[in-house]
Image 1 (tube, rainbow over the protein chains, first blue to last red):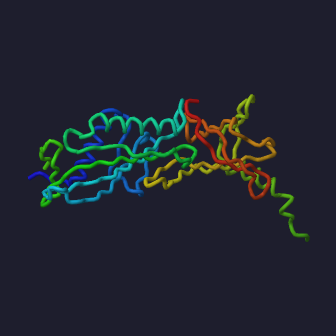
Image 2: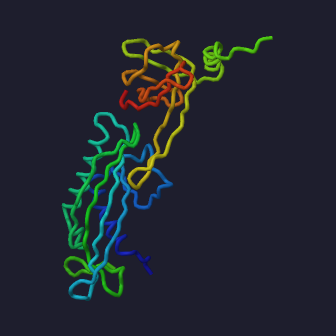
Length: 156
Length: 113
């Protein structure tokens, strides 16, 4: 029996896979707590988190999931470019990676970036900037693990 | 017997303390040769809370005797620390310490040096 995976975790994994294709050097950390800081050797990288709202779709057979993913991109002090330039390039690359296929292989209805900010001067040798993207997708009413894909394909 | 006058000995206490307990570092003011001195260095890291994630980065603190370096260090100076080979740092946030005898500052890494 395969391990159960929540729908939102499937979407998160698909997002991170899409980013890794474009920026293999940009490490993604889905499950790092604040007690496990990133450090030298893990930059450039990003930590990702999400929140989701559910609503019954008009057809009443599915939930529409409205997910907000937040990336916090971190970079260390690097020769040749200031921290913010490195972070803004990472944000741009993530946005472009998700826009290349906004259904993420047919799983989503859509995914769009909705905003980012300037790098914060967190210390002399590390800086971070935030990107938020909004993803919409459908799940079965009585089985919230199963995503109903863009073309009707199920992602169990 | 009069009590010892600590104030008149403070500067000497600092220099003696550096000599006996200090860490060896190299300090290079601009357009000058690198100077090797012993002084108090805190090599600590610090964890910072960012927007929602955290990061650990160096939070080094260095003290320099104003007798040896009367000019206030700035970001054009270069500091190298034997415990962190291959890396160079520039002073930042340079302040006078409580005693008034020493410069106290953090550093920013200068990559590619």
